[in-house]
Image (cartoon, rainbow, N blue to C red; front, side, top):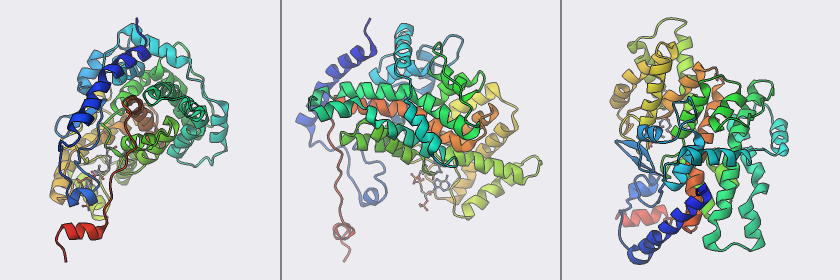
Amino acid sequence: MSTLKETLLKKIEEHRPRTTRLLKEYADTKVGEVTIGQAIGGARGVRCLVTDTSYLDPNEGIRFRGKTIPETFEALPKWPGSDYPTVEAFWWFILTGEVPTAEQAQMVIEDWKGRAEVPQYVFDILRTMPRDSHPMVMYSAAILAMQRESVFAEQYRAGSLGKMDMWDPMYEDCSNLMAKLGRIGAFIYRLKFKDDDQIDADPALDFGGNFARMMGVDTPYDDVSRMYFILHSDHESGNVSAHTIHLVASALSDCYYALSAGINGLAGPLHGLANENVLRWTQNFMESLGGKEPTQEVIKEALWATLNSGQVIPGYGHAVLRKTDPRYTSQMEFCLKNLPDYPLFKVINMIYQVAPDVLREHGKAKNPWPNVDAQSGVIQWYYGVTDYSFYTVLFGIGRAIGTLANITWDRALGYPLERPKSLTTAMLEEIAGIK
Ligand code: CMX
């Protein structure tokens, strides 16, 4: 039976001629026109990235390697007794596009165990940071601190790396890093919120099971973790975190530099931090009711108050999506099954009934529907993870899966340094015919 690395190499060798042909024979074929609006407006809709791990359709939402979320959950091998696939099975799938067998998924579980030990200096660094540092600062710093472990950087320094061989140490680095992220996340959580009372991993468990254990949260938090990490793994590579990771890696920076940089982008309130802000908004709103049941009218007023103060409604809107995010729907289905009567879930659902109309009436957002962040915090809260400044770290562990797979492929296909061309405002005015 082939290992993941052997399977990946076969896929890379099959794929390379396709990229070479596109570049050699079709480099001048137009795939779109860039407008002044796109140049100033954050390159919305400009088709200039290639991502094979996932594709985001504005109306349908994300497909991982061609599969919708339900298809992905259905197809991949599950941990015994669990409703959700293991993160390790998903890693095989997102890297190769092939659904692994249970044995192949188990091979990754075993492989990651050998890579999972986090160097002591990472814990020492985290312990010396101010305890009120945001968990995302700690998470990003921990990843960056491990750059000295990079196999890629070492081989590059030694001058022993041919361009077509670069994917191999990248694969090693990404596997090493991926295997450690659950430990790092759980360590930060217990350092900040549980008096540094740490819980060791259990070698008998998979990534999701161990994460729940190290967090100190009982079952079914293992399934919550598997679901959460897979749902947040990949959203093609135009979003801020994935794009940053791809961009930084394009300078042949190793994955420690790249992921740490991407995490800093994920920490922004317009991106991953929205999950923290959704919970803060909702809890503040519930407190303001002083124990009274919310009505749609009261929710509407609170949403308008937020908009009128110039803030965005967190968890709503999207740069690409134009319908309810299927990652929202998937988590809502989980809530309907596991916590249908939970008051916080009921409020989140009531906001869903009201917010799209409010945003339509407000008239600015192109997409009035909820995104992934509107629904994720309530599940964490229900299972006792109520320190919502930690929520974006959970997103960051998940986001690593897709983006590290993507930059392994960037190396395999020899993608060059990313360097779009800038114009000056005066040049745009001249193009526009402005005197
Ligand atoms: N509340 C209020 N206004 C909103 C809004 C929202 N939820 N979503 C968009 N708008 C506003 C924008 O701020 C923008 O206003 P200006 O013209 O004054 O700048 C206008 O509507 C047009 O924006 P858009 O083209 O619809 O959306 P963008 O592609 O510029 O931004 C996003 C997308 C996600 C940043 C935006 O919808 C937003 O700020 N949402 C709230 C924050 C959030 O939930 N982020 C998480 C996204 C998912 C993720 O990455 O994790």
